[in-house]
Length: 383
Length: 123
Image (tube, rainbow over all chains, first blue to last red; front, side, top):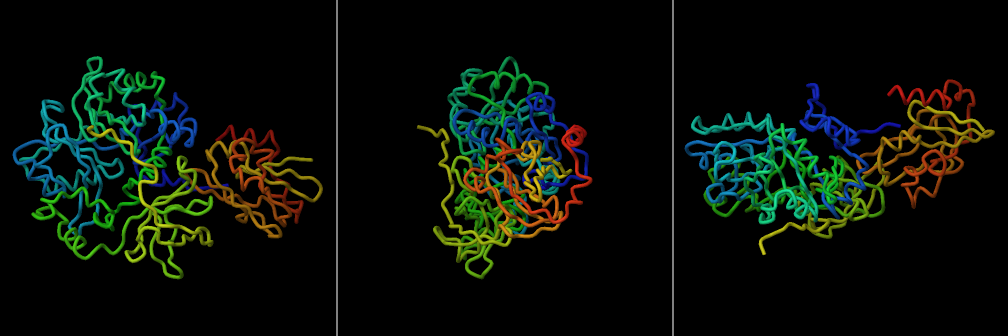
């Protein structure tokens, strides 16, 4: 018997590093795998159980591998608007936005969350950014190259990051920090818990209500223990994080998003506000405008799969005899109760309900272009 | 009946000329939640080491090899409706397929239960 671990396939030349919660994960019975250069928990009791728990209660995810950056200095908004296609000048204090780094050809270098700090959190920096773990050092290099000297970027590698996700996340976190109940989706702010300064945003990557909590590495064990002592909360591994985000229709960088694909094709045009489209002034703008006018060559789509056989990353997608695309994420979806996938399909075949076939081990299985998310989002928005 | 084990974490029960093949409890534990099992067609002949079945967990697909050469005489159809049987009862009801043994000498050199336990403990 042998297999490739889809989730942990990234090969690292450097020895894997330990996250601040490494011993904590092991003590909780986690199975650790290499991911993004770190030993990370892929599962504790099992992906199906952890996935279901997060959809019904609240799951705690260690996402400390991700890069946490701050930006400050004269002209920081203008400088970031050169790097990011999103509206930074219009980003109000304590608000967060989904954005991405694009290369000169409009290819996606990374996707990320950016927020305006407001107040004196993070030493009074102006902007807080969370980027993917596997790409963080490349992102930092890219940004150093493209930021003016007046803008100071700080990589907070002494800061851990937890995500608390699920319909009971709000109630759970409010028992430790009552003031967090006031946060709504994509809002963030500074909080203090037992004297520990936290930066908390109401966001996440599971499609559920929840939070991302930035905490000094030295205090993360205490916070993780306090959260998991609550009846609503269990630790959840990378495996369920992947199946949850796939059901939520959220793309995973390095799989569904790469430098070879564009924002408009990825159906992420919402991250480029009207003013930025019209005015431009960001790296990759020409590609965005061209694809808005002419349409992209191919699109990221959801795929409903007939039967029980999962179609996984790399599987070819056909319309009759014609190769029209490739699966970029796929697997069994526990909440849907069937296999689902995400893939890139050439435009004429990417319309909703388009009947396609996916080749799995020499066999063709029927698939249909389906709307995403596969499981409805349940974010807590402003009433 | 004798039970043999391979270092690919498969078990083989031998009764006369028929060998029943499955994956070990250790293997199912490593794979996690199993959501699909692709079984070979009856009548297929395998050489030792051929890809014989595929087991899909939530996170990945893994090959199951023919531990010895032989012809498939029966497959476990219960796995089609309930692949999780491999998780709940890997070494009995979660069997994969039965082979008519082509060359009994291939069984030599496989591990017995005690040796397999020792092998797993060393991993």
